[in-house]
Length: 148
Image (cartoon, rainbow, N blue to C red; front, side, top):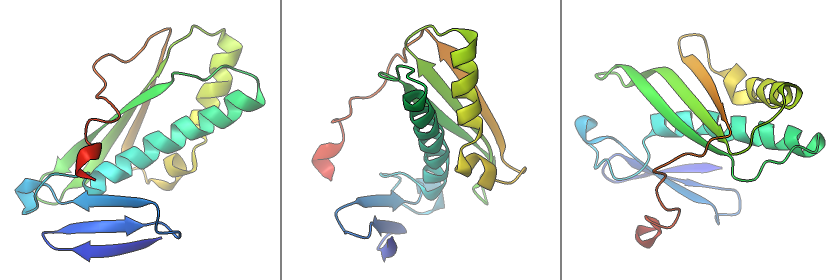
């Protein structure tokens, strides 16, 4: 992948094929426009994405249904001046109830995510599981596509 600096403290991340593009932006309080994901947002999103991906892989291997799973990811900044992330919380909403054995498989998969292990202990990671629940108030997947 390639990261290209764009004016106004933004970057454009290009995949090897140049078909995958992610734009990051610096938060307003640090001189950016605050219109796109910040690099620390991407850090938190990487953890959430990795956890859900690992759970999906193990769900498929063990024939556990995995449709409709959503993770809500949030972060806490330790010091706004430095932007250092101190905590990332990943709340996983699994729409069906599962027995304890299947929950254990999915939760073990979540905790074996490579991004989870790559972050050092200065970033507290909380992984919360909500079975038989769906996430309310999730934005539409197409809401912001008109500006891309």
